[in-house]
Length: 136
Ligand SMILES: [Zn+2]
Image (cartoon, rainbow, N blue to C red):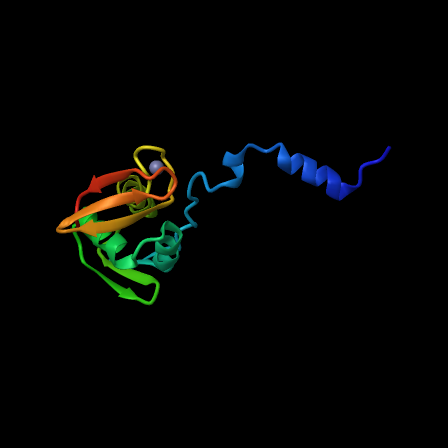
């Protein structure tokens, strides 16, 4: 009796718990971060926003609020006024994820932001939970 490779692979796959196939958590890309003079440039913030499935302007609004500075967007590149370390920016992006991306009920990232009247909610596509979030 012999198994061919495909059959073995199929067998291994069928034994994986569902959770490892579904998107369990988001992996942030390495920030392409540079400090030039008194400005901080993040080349791939657009990519980050895309992975989080959020509008870059929304993400940026949160970042500039937390950093208490101004920023400009050029395509997917963002230029902040002032010097900020990569760790600082990453930490704020993670806080953004906790507030605006991760479902507080099931902890999955498959959510979207909906607006009703003047309120914003995080609607989870995995468990259906609707959680109120602050408007920024
Ligand atoms: Zn959920």
